[in-house]
Image (cartoon, rainbow, N blue to C red; front, top):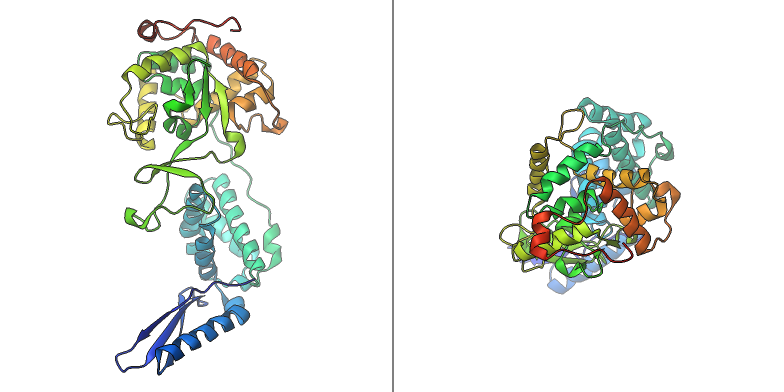
Length: 414
């Protein structure tokens, strides 16, 4: 496999000689390896530099395959993933490597890794009180990196690829209690932007999908919402330096709105979907549009100044809504926002709705994906959501919004 070393640089020293310098990966201890050449003239230096680059491409750096450390390879591997992975995935990989893998076994040579080293990472994670699920995810990242190291020609004991992964931990995340869900929605009905929380609990929309929803994707006449984008903060090429531009992988589709906040496509094609609105939601959105902050980006639920909403502020509002509704998880904590999505799936399934319809509404859910994905038409999905809306006490719409909107009549089909 051809290895990239960069084109190098040429400069003149104070004594008049010309120096060529190449960044050639990392030493066995994980520090950067630089190779230099010298010549009497600039032309000779450039020629020598080209020859050295050609030699490195053909034969690699000395000791590279035999003595490369986990840290040395991890740094170059992580850089390479920037052009391949979604920014959020790359951010998670970087966190796992820098917080757990490198501090624990970064000094070890790839060729001398043992199962005990992998278990040492697991032990470090659990020693800090993290769950076996976290350990499982991090071991998956480590295994992927080691597979790539083998493909790159490094000697890595193959038995490391077949170690058992930690079991998934039991967690208390589940659907919100139906009575609590109803109380939360009743509290939301009194808020001007209460439709934000109906989108989560009834429509099953993710946080990023809600915060990235624009008015041109809402069709109150047809009664549909086009879920094709989601709001996400993308990283800069250099942290805290916006002038360096955003770091995105090849072929990544995005629309920059405000600083690092961008509209990006859902993770999978299945995530892009058109979902029907029940009359309550249509009425709420019609009323909200009359008083929503003006947004230069056409966002449905922006900040008061019209800029994209920050995820942390949105989560704070979600907790405040639960406090207002006096609804808490059985363990005494606030419900996680993603549990609203679980609630949508659970209520749909408990209403006897076919799994294919549930999947079409949610785009994806671990509750139903074992059944696979099948097409469901809009009318089936609309009837399914109407059944859940009735169960949650969401009829025609919030009274104060219906008065503003003039009411929205049911169609014959509904």
